[in-house]
Length: 101
Image 1 (cartoon, rainbow, N blue to C red):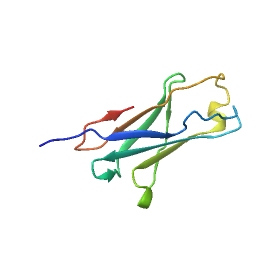
Image 2 (cartoon, one colour):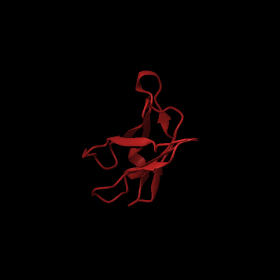
Image 3 (spheres, rainbow, N blue to C red):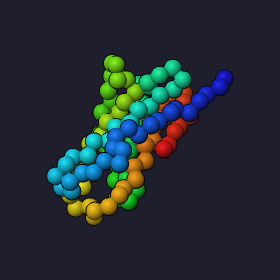
Image 4 (cartoon, rainbow, N blue to C red):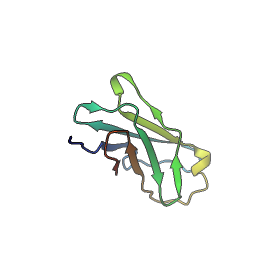
């Protein structure tokens, strides 16, 4: 049996800017395999500079299957220092190899 890792792609934000303490920050990524969008994956978004995991994750279904969204509220990021932050996306699902980006 051959297994392939899930393919993950962070879509949003992509060099976007936000007003500190005013804007909510939407994080959106998709998870695919060789057949298309993957439903039912466990997805985590992590901002290492602030040691923050974004949860809960909302999974889109239907035509947008395989997309997973999370929002960092304006009150959560309101006390963060100004600057650039990295986001790590991790996806797991039974019978698949894990993926991280």
